[in-house]
Length: 385
Ligand SMILES: *Cc1c(COP(=O)(O)O)cnc(C)c1O
Image (cartoon, rainbow, N blue to C red; front, side):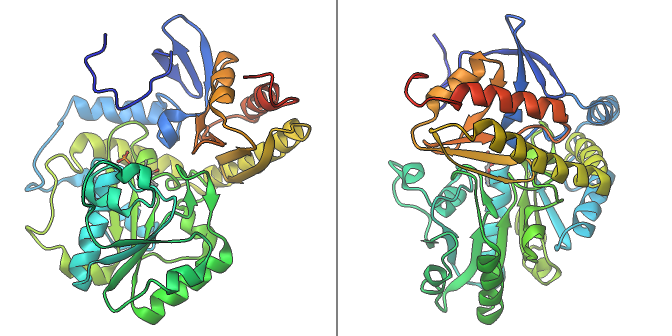
């Protein structure tokens, strides 16, 4: 009997240890971990640079208040500002908190409440981020949502345009909807969004919690679409498993976040910052990112080849190393079967298998995963159930 609130339908799997892309369970069985803590362990489990940085910091100084000067925070902020469209950074502890900061900043800067987000988006579980999330199943049972969010359709600029009013503060998007089925914005939509934001003086908020920090083969996913967001949120891969998030904003937003405007006890503490600096140093490297892009293309090729015979597969979508295999049927049984065969993958909605290998994955491991997936969905639809 568990004393936990049953907020998760947990797998029959308990991890004992993990290194790189390999996870070992308490029975000694090895898995190829293409979940990576849900796009968190971008550098693989226990990456030596990250372990070193954390251990050293743990022996020196864990935590001080944000009333203190924090050298590691200044350093991480300057890297994030330099490498993004933003100029200033606020550190917090999770993706949802980064989005809360973004929503608060957008409201305070504009003096307006209305934010347009997209149907099937996912922005987190706290009251603000939950309201931003365009999925009624996330809202159900929790009473009145924080006003004033409306939801436009992905890649349908007219549906965005129709919702803009004089009360609109911002448009908030993911460039690839992760939880929503690995669905990407297209370049036309991106360009039109940019134009709409300029025309109506709206802030563009891009939630890079899942797509940021190298996942798509670029530092941030928005770079693929030539966007220049006013606000960017990151978390997941930023700490490689250490809980940390960040909200990055442009220069013109600075005045809205003054002392007392917003805060966090733990946000950006020395332990978190030691990890973030090690992660950024490793991931924000041109040759590292080029390899991620290359591996993403190769993996797409392996999957196309391995799954071409499968009647179950409808479409394979990917950007760098975030991949979705949309099936004609629910994928829950496929995911269980893959796990039995030693490959850990996730669902994204009922019909999509989501694959998030660590960015340090080898081509051999990608090929191995494609082979396992072929066994799982390969030649049949019904018999695997
Ligand atoms: C996971 C996720 C979040 C929420 O992050 P938490 O750290 O769980 O609060 C927000 N936005 C996106 C796009 C995500 O994938």
